[in-house]
Length: 405
Image 1: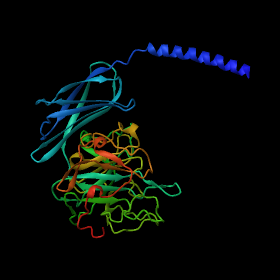
Image 2: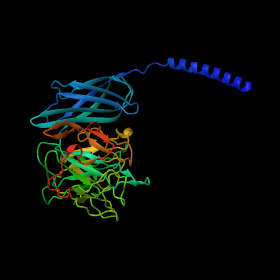
Image 3: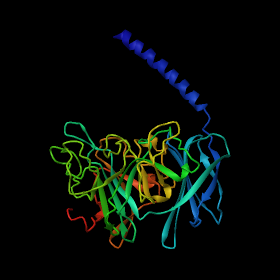
Image 4: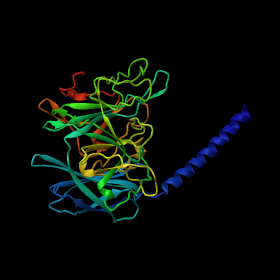
């Protein structure tokens, strides 16, 4: 026992000496020097008014470090903004603004991703576009799926709630919902052919509300688009599912398995699906979604392929897009943007798969007994994770023509 005690004492002394040496080494390291960066902003406004103020954010996701700055424009259309206190590293940079004028709300957004900032007083160029806030918005999306009682994965309970966030009646007749390419967040973005490629987003699948009759929704009302508009809490589906979707207005009905039945919901039209195996499925890792009214009838034969690839996709004019939201698999993928910043300057994640949680838009205010939701075209700011998915949250109403609700 004495020998063991002596050996332990020697080891303790040696570790103490080594530790002191380490602290001395650390004390010699110089503090990281913060630097300044110049942001050169180009405002592409078309007919939109000049914003009064811009908010700039530098986000270093790896270091969990963020710097924000608000700048008054004072009539400048192409300002150069100096931002201090930047720790050298890789940044996602966003510029945003909002302005109300003549009864409309305008959102201004621009972003660049994976920008190395290492030299003092470097210059970063960023283009900022303007868009009116859409009357219809994604209110809540449940995409990650849920677990069965035996621990299996279940995704048939996915749904997408579209809300009338405006003061006027909206008609969803002919409204389309599309999943954009690539299906999941990636740093290897495709290159699209044509000088006008930047005017479009590119869909992998499109479903459309029937256009043979009107489907009006009043302010404060919403529609539910369900992958499968059934009660998913039934024993033959998934007792652990958080949702009953029998009251959904629409479903993407494809009778591909014995589990799927034609429910009371109105069947949407499969407008574009190049895969030989048709079904609606948003990846549980997070998709980029848009809703839009096509300016011309969708012709599934008019396809486009990324340069060097053969996969077929459909071009959607950005000006036809009503709302969009980009979902990613985890917080480290937020900078892997697939969608133009004029539609969504950020990205949202629920943090994993088969968690039984949803992403819901935050409440901005209450007006005449109905909620107004945030719509800044930046889903990083507009959405939050809800531990229990809930259709028609915050008192949203179903439209009168839904007689099966």
